[in-house]
Length: 295
Ligand SMILES: [Zn+2]
Image 1 (cartoon, rainbow, N blue to C red):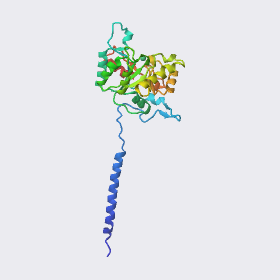
Image 2: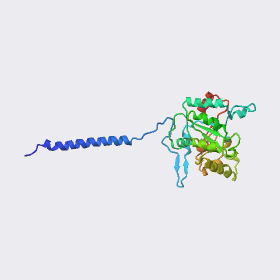
Image 3: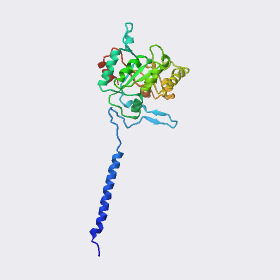
Image 4: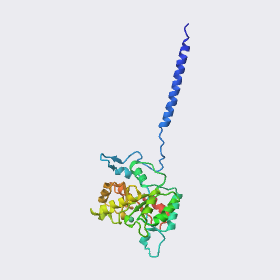
């Protein structure tokens, strides 16, 4: 006896329905897994998908300056001495000496305003590769190896989870009023970045061939021996730089160099990153106004 058609097709239709259902489920799952978790872009990044880093065959990478210049600058502050003024401090000297209570107020105000400290590698990745930064990013830098940068600034920054960059001139290590090697090592161990500020703070524009090993190579070697990490960032003494210095730093595989508030070099913006010195007279509101206007 012949089976009715619908009883023959029923199992086939059922099978097709089940396989369609399974396929749909699987593809839903695979779609869910394939969706990348994107970090929130919380800082204006106009060229987020453009990479400025061009790999070359010799393993060296070259940065496209236009892409770097296209990104909004991150506020970078530069501190020297953090101590109360003495009667003998001149008006000019006070530009480089931030009284202790003023520094405390500044850190507190930055934290209260929602600033997040970033480190040079984050700045590099943002400017060169368009990598997102935390909201309200700021870079805190300290020049000249002063002892109070360890005893006062570090402690104050720790209250808010802030990290900084310490540009060391190696000649002063261990001298009275300056940081010791152990303190530099501890700063690095605690997640801060150690950079080079030459051997004895002489102006790079005056260097001759014999000065580069003395002012750049030996200090880098000494600092690397102290912290056990490569030295990749440099701050020009007095903020002064020229083309020759940039080429010398590139040859030595520095990733970036910091000046003061002069205009960036359009061809080498990563080697002329701008910072503003925080004078001792500034109130917290003056500081924040300058940050908004300078970067
Ligand atoms: Zn300096």
